Amino acid sequence: EEEEEEEEAAKEPPTQKEPKQAPGADAEELTVFVGGLPWSCDDEMLRRDFSECGAIASLRLLTDKETGRSRGMAFVTFADVAGFEASLKFNGDDYGGRTLTVAKAACQADGKGKDGKGKGKDKGKGKGKDKGKDKGKGGKSGGKGGPSTRTAGCSSVVVKGLAYEASEGELRAVFACCGRGPTAVRILTDRETGESRGTAFVDFDPSDAAAPDEAVKLSETELRGRFFRVDYATPRSS
Image 1 (tube, rainbow, N blue to C red):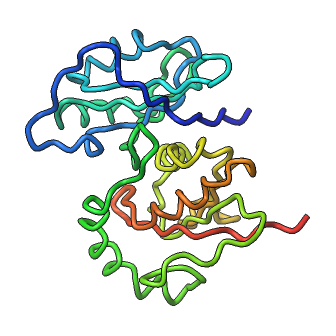
Image 2 (image 1 turned 90 degrees about the horizontal axis):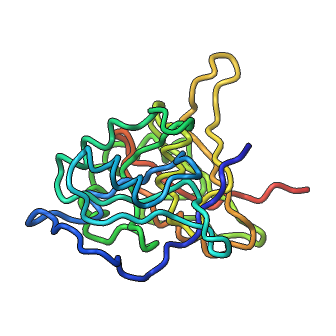
């Protein structure tokens, strides 16, 4: 059964006082995306269990806009690096009968992507490392020219240059803030070995029109030590 997609996070400020972040700490650098939460998990349960990792600066459990029920996903921002790093060790753990995905959030809990500062820090490094190889394989996207033109009916993006160890759960975490989040993630694998080919497709609901545009802005994001590229996918003909 496919995982439910997330709704945009509500913008109301938290109702209770939160600990301040460590001086100089950037909120988006200390935020994790948590997927695979039990449907019964509420704010109190999530805060209690993740507080074992360290002080929590803010927390937002994603809920269905109409029913108010949990979507099984959340963003947790820690007050310091130690708490953030400890939480990543929960990735893959069984939690209430479901398998947790815990990964560094590529966007903020309010739905905004990383700013120029975060992207610029890594951009040159990633391009310098993969530019020649990626250009040869080539495609339509990339480099300084940016993504290709989005065609009519496009509701998916293609992700290239992925680390071979990257999982579908981690990609869901990366693209969680794009519109209402992915409806499906498919990593392409070698037919004989079953190993990742370093390419994936991320699908969004066709009614979630802005999601692909937000997704391509995450090009040059680092995941497991590699900086991947994102481009619009060509719609499959029916």
